Image (cartoon, rainbow, N blue to C red; front, side, top):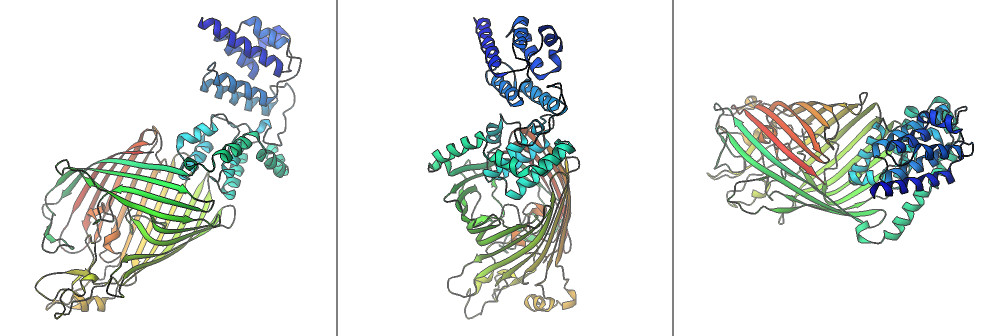
Length: 620
């Protein structure tokens, strides 16, 4: 019965081909040469699968009318056979690949090569054996907030790279400038010199015809039908991480008080092993063409802004879920984005200054402007409340600004340089008046890690610590992404920071004790980080990988210790050392990460801390 059905399907395919095709060869010649043409290869495979007989194959070729089959009809036939399960996806890809080669050489028609001038021409067939460009577009699709598998669904039947690029342009996944750059790269990599020249001359006509493609019309109809439905405006995303962590301390370390709790001893000598989890869920909704909203939930606690980890081992108790993001985003133009509420880090940065888990409260603006095909300019700025205090005008604020340039040739080189200035206001401690105990306790930070120079603002025998220095941080960050061996990339990082707000005399006056002199003080206000990453820039699928190595040095008062990386030296400043690790893809959106971080103190009593982390990550 199955064989009979298969033969019936094959016979129906055969008669369909008879109506579409117009090429003709003599039976004997066609059978003999069948393997050298795309049509011959298809018929040969159908014979091997016992779908059609030799006689049926010969009859088709004999009745085809003496003309070559149009390229688009061949593609349509291949897709139809694949959809019916007659041939596999791999076999279909092989036929399309062969079609792209024969169309450029004229082998299929037996004549001179055709010169393609539009998106429907043979020269624009995507060579499926080289998927680098398609992978770059898929990554761009994912970065724009779409799921990876959705990309494959949308474009599973599309082997014309120019069509993919322009559909992404219309769907706003690619900006006009990015789409132009991808098209230029496609022409250079996959088309002959003659074809590229003709395309340049016919570019306006080509783009217009692609925009009128039937597939686009279908997209427009689908979007129009569902544009007012809530599910077309809302997108869910999230991630999950399981971590084993070991914290290792040198037994010769000194003894330290906790900066935020001076009556308690900080662990500096006893190794610690713990399981940790992190879970995050995000909901983004498009309200209008220019305005969107987002809400994010995450594990963690309200006392730690630099971590969303939860440590397991609390008598099987339930874990906290907190509001991690809540923002409105306004995009008045393609170049400008304005954020308000609580949102992701708006800066171009590394974890030298900001922990990767920090989100910002306030208002921020991002501006990106394309200057040439390769160069673009960016500007970021923001105002962020750090601590609001009811009965005083000394609210704590952060004002920030950043300018930079980016050079981008997608297939070879990307370089980015940013210069930022972060100005913290009203964060220096103020000593309490003995007659008004506790009146200026609000000048102490609500959260500290360790490393900064501190002052005691409590004149009694108790201790209340606050920052002794002002923080006005100049930060210069640069990356160089070398893609000569794409998809394997080499990414270099250099980051430098200096606290211009540190005044040695002012700090000395605030921390002065009976025996301390100003010459005893050290001015430690600089930090830097150098890094190297080799492999896939993002690990998204099975077998993808990367490895990294960083060296970091962060002096005591280079940055405010509250907001820097919470893993290196277990948080804070006054640390130097290195980080080594890597990522390995296990499946789509599932990967392993391992890191070893080793750090020592720069000055003061010894404090050597090594951290090992082994993570199982998943995203959706």
